[in-house]
Image 1 (cartoon, rainbow, N blue to C red):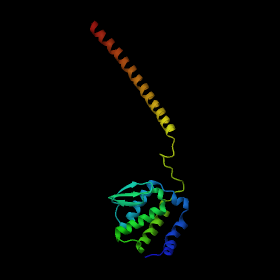
Image 2 (image 1 turned 180 degrees about the vertical axis):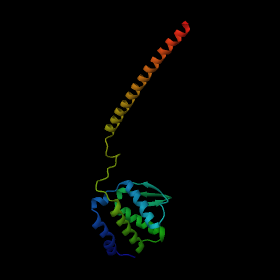
Image 3 (image 1 turned 90 degrees about the horizontal axis):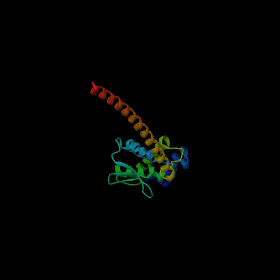
Image 4 (image 1 turned 135 degrees about the horizontal axis):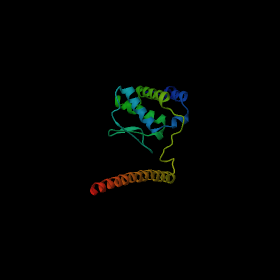
Length: 176
């Protein structure tokens, strides 16, 4: 069983060399899903078989009843730690073995290499003013209907012109 000093020496050195604390807290939900898929494929050598969903609040990154929940608000460090434990349980059924330490090391290296972002993730639902958003949607709807109204008026003009033509043609025929 690995000790805390081994964990710090092996896994924490990867985090400290390759990333900043801000980057480790900055997790885009889609990148978290992509990491889970990529790491599973790297370890198990097959595609990720579970349904993936984004969790929030106090939920951990774990699989329950065929649905794998990943919580981006945990940060990369905890996502990787939970994924290491979950993979170890899948492969050996145990906990806190040397293999789990290797999983965490490889996961941290994968995150540092491919998934870190500098810009903070802003949840689009939380970061917008709903009144401004709805007002802009109303403006866009008015613009769409104005365009439809102009097209309808044009189509009516053309049809009325055709009707006048056919009315004159029919009256000339009836006169003969």
